[in-house]
Image (cartoon, rainbow, N blue to C red; front, side, top):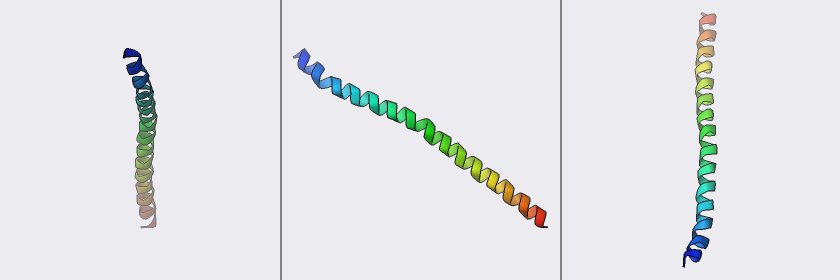
Length: 56
């Protein structure tokens, strides 16, 4: 019975492990993209303000 249980839980453990690994590898990427987008918008806003100030 215990051997059957081990055979059943082993693929499940591998699945959970790979999913968590995938999640933790995707999470920093999402965070990085979020920061990058924020920086782009922030710098874009500053650049637009600079141009509008230059025109006046």
